[in-house]
Length: 130
Image 1 (tube, rainbow, N blue to C red):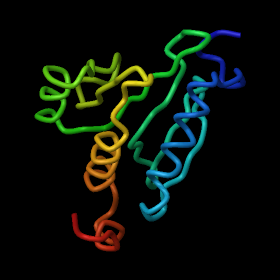
Image 2 (cartoon, helix red, strand yellow):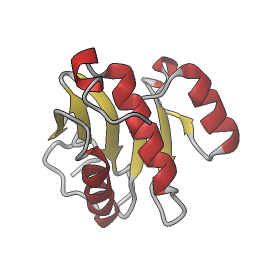
Image 3 (cartoon, helix red, strand yellow):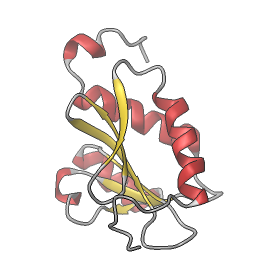
């Protein structure tokens, strides 16, 4: 199976990251998780994606892409080990390999900010203040 097979098995690293992201997204109203046509796991609010998780073409790997604004993207690339996401990076998407060095507290902040950027105002109002 190729990395772009929607039916491919998820790597152990992906499964662990899905578990963490599910916990991070639990307090965010109306976030759903689905698989896209490439086999990536996508966390969305409505039709808008906030996080995309895949295997990065490696049998044991995982990568995570987060929907951020362009200023945050510049910072993440320069200081936090992220890279511009292929194909969608021009829209601010930034990616990082998921490994033991990932700062999940920082990821939680980025996911919450992504949610605030794309969620309908009626849902953002339901969040507790930062």
